[in-house]
Amino acid sequence: MSVPERPAFAARRREHIVELLRANGTMALRDLADRLQVSEVTVRRDVRILEAQGVLDRRRGGASLPGHRPPRRGGGVAPELAAIARAAAALVAENDAIVMGPGAPVAALAAELTHRAGLTVVTNSLRVAQTLAETPGVEVGVTGGTLRGAELALVGGAAEQALDGLRVRRAFVSGHGVTAERGVSTSNAAVAGVDRALAECAEEVIVLADHTRIGVDTMVQTVAPEYIAHLVTDSQADPEVLMTLEDMGTTVHVAVPDTDRGQ
Image (cartoon, rainbow, N blue to C red):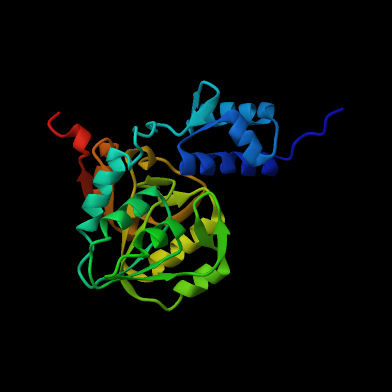
């Protein structure tokens, strides 16, 4: 007689699948099973459930997030993220003091800031820190905390305490979803706690999110919609969500990827 699986364990495992896909784009079922230390049968069942919920797309022998495009040959940042990063970089002033969270859009922004001067950045993202580490004009501060491998982000009480008492002009954050009803959300409570701390120490919150995250609502709210000063997204984002956020006072920046120009 088999023992019924506890719902909390299954929910946490499916949350981890989404986090891995956020970090890696597309993954084979066998790789997901290895990372989760469960059978492929279990992963296949989880993937079917997540697909039915609209959270991911099943592919032959694997899974990916909705709207995910395979990496271009030669690597590099996806066109949508590159466009978002360029638009967001225009919101960073010389001699600015900012905080930056984890996530692919924010990491792409960091790459756009490597030629800036007099910039002070505090981050809990190891990707952001590594990108800016050798930039002479940028002073980088990294929070303490526990490393969360899927995002390469530092989380927990130490990370939140490192941000307590800071006051900067702008916070650049991402998330797993952005809606007009709940604002920014993420699938992990530890990540959400630091995202909130990043937002709270800034005069303005700037959210970077590609079209696959617009209209998506995940488990834990991080930034309420009324506190999103700017949203930077790409031209494939749901216009109804963008217009509703604009009506609520958010300044929306729609970045057009180079691949879409002239169409």
